[in-house]
Length: 219
Image (tube, rainbow, N blue to C red):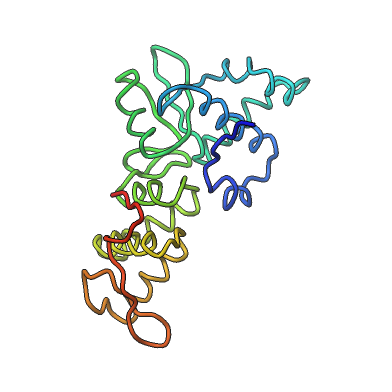
């Protein structure tokens, strides 16, 4: 039996947010199709998806539903869409690396939606350092998480954010809620020994940590 890696948020926060089963089915099938391709990035058109045998059966007898589900996934930010005057719209998973590739690899006049570099656009979020940290160390962004990340980026010093992500990885607590608690505690009680990767724990004292733990941290 072969296995397909599914981005963690699709089995967590996005599973709670996505109410339309057609959007969920389409998103999961896109994950599978992209995983079957070679390389780190694969573009799909609406025509590609309509020609897929599984999706054809899922949406059989319901014209326009696939396009509606595709638009919903793009608006949510699960997929990134790129289109320009020289060709039709193409879609792929909305990750930091794919976003950067979308900005470089297609038509220079292409319009990118689902996300944009300045944080504007329908359903889009900016691709700042904190977003890259989240996607590289935790998982795929959802709109709710993106808003919380933007608020944190404005509220806390940049080095605090980096250190909090590093601490979560060192403790194998890869969740935004855990990182939020670290940042809130530092804001409330002070950083303690700034720059050491320590943070106050309940009941007093400090917990030792640091980037030398045997766990990957991407920044």
